[in-house]
Image (cartoon, rainbow, N blue to C red; front, side, top):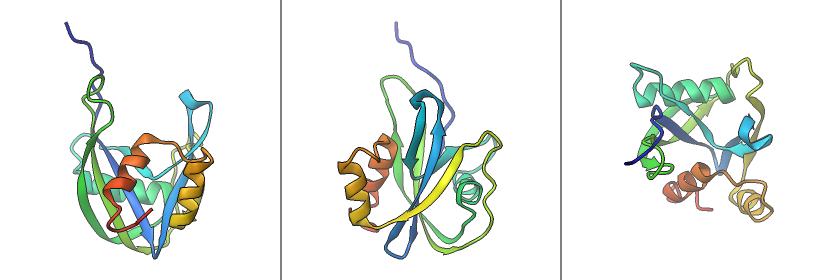
Length: 144
């Protein structure tokens, strides 16, 4: 007998502004403290992954991106969840107004250089596993 959790797919968006990666600081209830992550969120029923990536980028950062590159797929914990994630790189940004969820999910948006990302990882300030996976997948665009 196998038990696993069925979850909807999600998108992970590595948002690049020049040589900087856009990170969001979010409240994550199970963590009991805010975490730094790349843009990500669920794909709504009937929504394409690209439409979800555009929506999440706008909601969380206010940015619009002229260019989205689909760079791969990941599964967070294949032994426990069936939840696939579609990974994008977003480039050529235009600023706008963010519309985070009313629950106070997004606390802060930051642009970080590769050196700053390495420093955050080394100090334990950046520890989200999907962000790590996305960084590895996007190393051609953003060498950390």
